[in-house]
Picture 1: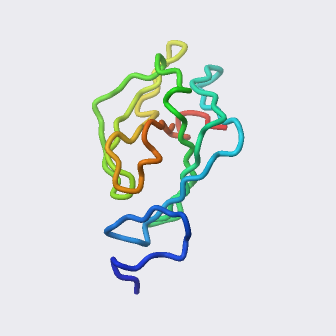
Picture 2 (picture 1 turned 90 degrees about the vertical axis):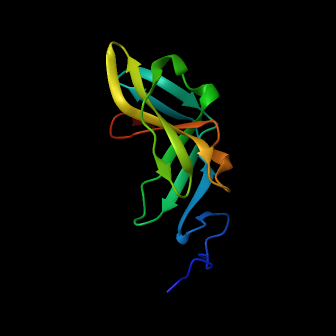
Length: 133
């Protein structure tokens, strides 16, 4: 069984310092990605990245968009934060477009864990609430 000082064989991965079997790779999305609610496009970017994470499970990849490409007028910060031991502390947003409010629809890491700095200034959307293509 792996101990806290061991690492996986995955190259170019960021590992949780307390649990090396919890890791992620951050890779360029490789194509233009969008996030929308209904017909309202919140972001279109060719500079998005994809986070591929393994922890207690193999998680679905998450697309993160540069904040500069996001229509920030459609996002309103809400009073919610979470902590991920691999990535850091988040802030959350609701999306408000076309008279519709989608609660807890987006997040951004604001205080990164060492090694996760590549997520600085990026925003992800909950794909159960926002369409990400």
